[in-house]
Image (cartoon, rainbow over all chains, first blue to last red; front, side, top):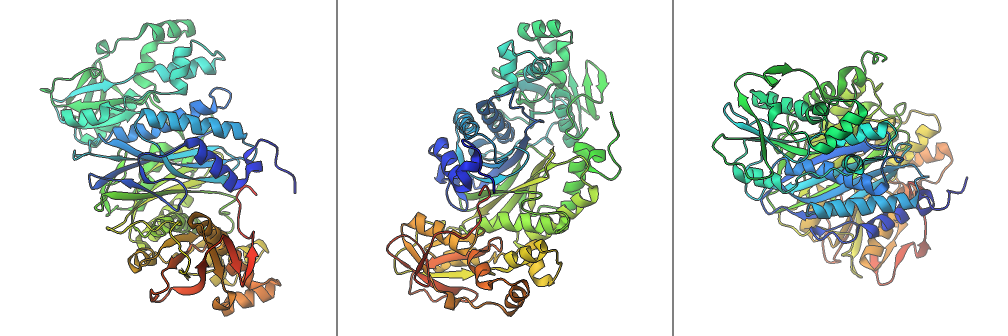
Length: 317
Length: 317
């Protein structure tokens, strides 16, 4: 039997690892019962609970040479919590399942915990429990819960002809950052950071529900792809108008340097976890909601009047 | 670009895979909103929700040559739901995150869905949502939720000196099955099946809460190891008496054939997901609860008066 390497999770062992990780995560103020038992207990004052699960695997969703452990923690939490707010709910807790190689550095685990803790706090929630197992592939699975505060869940299926289509949050930034990194660059930091640490507009999910949004989802696969999900679930056609999308100077500069069309990032780039919602036409949309189109009878997604079939990410494609 | 192999998840693609898996899982009767949106919505009539997450990775928690896909579905669901009932809660839903190699056969995914569906139904619940990602390591992460129905959660930390210690469910069967398989045998089926498809006594969790159990956990790491968790969390000593544990004839026969001590399986074998609970001495325990010891002041676990330090499973050990 070989000795596990110093400073690795193999050296800590399962229970040492759990103790260290839980200690690093700190208290779980939102939990009635936090980490350390068979399960956590959370308040569900609404009498319903919203729940969503999301996995990230090294080499596909993150690379340790492109993102720090803390970045990965931020990204994992942002991705999971974005699904909760996209239903119009307020996040109430996150449980994390870690599948780790035994040679994962303890420092990396500390960083992951820091990123998870900080991003959860930004969204007003905390990690309340988890599981660690050994695996050859570093995989992080987060399950987030939320409370609807008396509102109806905002599904993808409620868009009606005549509704306005709007987004809150950034479009194309994470895609730009990913291309910069994949070309071997580490800057400009603004776009690279957007890939490493998405900034979903957490507060806007429950706000959209209160404003009367008829459908909503977070943009994880790209604006067109996710609009297609809304169109399909609602049985409607979604029209997007690119003249409503202003391309940020920073993205224009980066695109120019890399020789690509920045509009593609806005239309097809996922992982910024902006929110896409439809609203009755009469709703006056507050900042930061940006109207970018309309709902019509029919099916599919049309950009400036042209049908768009593809554009987005298929994990197995 | 190479073509994905016929009959694999790579050929289906991400969205084809999701459609097929969700279709195979069938309806989610317990969900207010089932699979297909950013998140599921479940009833939480108690105003609190119990949540627990568990990962299984191929080669560590299951082997495709030892267990069918359906077996793996049963085992994954049993393991996740056992944590919910071990809090005294009734299961209300399961979300599943699948990390799969692109060459995973579609048939295997169908079998997994069948196993998950059937085991969830046995426990009175269903799969309500999920996520699929591509990975080199086949990893299944289940997160289960539960409702406490007005009872206090039964933690590991409530055992008091004078309490009785009792178990419900099987001990040692899964460990016997695992050893049989690891020695290259495929029978006797009774023990091999116990490894493939644990049978947690789901109904006994909420029953224990109503009976007034002071502490409870499911036995996933072995009786001694899990009793140590209760002892540590409660700040007490747990005494176990082996003369209360009758060794089933089947386990005795298998142990004899393999040349091992069957008592070790009962004391140190995990993954049957029996329930271990402590009760005030005056509680009259109904079937199938079996008194096997008592709680005393002090710390640690003693078997027939002898301190037991080890015995159990450390995933990174």
